[in-house]
Length: 176
Image (cartoon, rainbow, N blue to C red):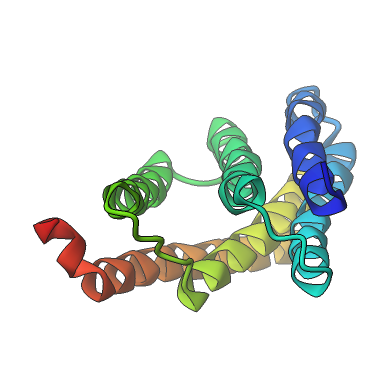
């Protein structure tokens, strides 16, 4: 297994530790784990492209590891009453729609790469989550919660936009 794939697996292994720390209200520990795991997302892609280590495992597992990390965090934030559950439902609906379209396309031998708007959505989510976790840790700092919520709402808008863009650009998948 190459280094980028090890980083991806490491990100997946970090999730239970992140969840455990969060659930025990060790918010700063959860914050650090989330930041480190998010950093591996950026790092594994850069290394894979720079060294020609792009693999099918990485193409599939890297975005899956991101989703497991981010959506675990969003579920926990719902449990704390920080974000509304309906927002996660919108996010998950987009993910299921995109994944379904990718599966149909793949069954026809077609690979649909992630678009920039989808990557932007992920970056916004990976910024919002640690801000919101820190806001829970330092509950008297209104600015952290406010900033985290603004970035979260921006990520939700980016989620809807990227989902619509994905469907429009790949509408021919519906006729396969």
